[in-house]
Length: 321
Image (cartoon, rainbow, N blue to C red; front, side, top):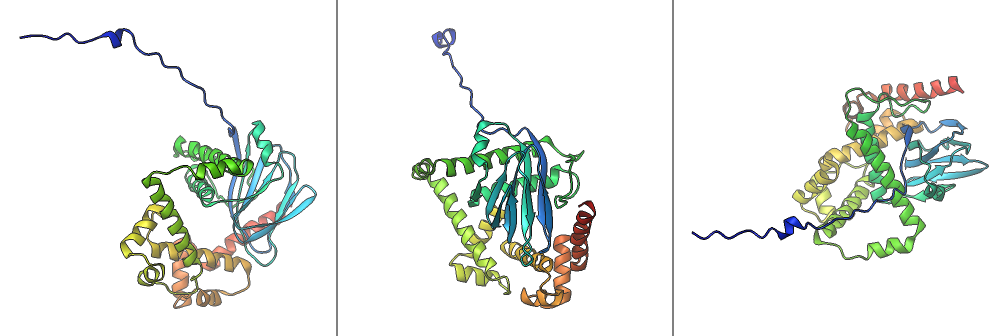
């Protein structure tokens, strides 16, 4: 039997690897507040200033904001940054009940100066990053995310550090995305022209299709849509439609449509322009009783309890101001 000796030259003379350090353009040091607000149409926050950054983003509706001596109307999908030391306030316009995301944090990196005084528009990927932050916050933080007078965050005792790190990473990715897209549009266009793999193209196509169908559902909130009707009007098969929503939102299309209806009902309740019966009829529910059951199933509260909850926060605010 012949034994062939193994060539061990590459073991005795291993290649040397030299690493590189990756620079952090934005590093979030501390998180001071993280809120998702569902305001009454009459809500008004008198204002404050502090020594860290804050941004407010309109998820639904619109609000008036003050930044130093300037005032702006901030609309759905827009985000406004307040730099450390800047006095700022926010109020609803008396007609539209807004949903707002407000996050404040410390970040001392020089690149943050780009956001001084900025009002930017979010793209879908950036909206999803914010949604991811809010989702993680529900598991990570004690208390309510809709208390505008909370001054101290508390971490849940039974939570995982994974949630906190994901919040920071999502927030840093949001800043990076906004910075690159607005600081150097030509670079963003060049990246968008880079050839994509078939898998990436498929994901982009799915994202566009999901956005199209979501807008379709939003425009038919007063109807009583079925899966068959959604498929017919959007030229999509039932199986692909269900897979699209399972992959994008983790739920079925009808469940998602029902959640959109309840979200709209909450906004209408807070605007104070219609009573519960009128809202139920406007959104296509068969009866006020069915509307109330669906509302409680989604929110854990009846419509009346929801009103009391929102008003309690407003009353607490008046006491503190």
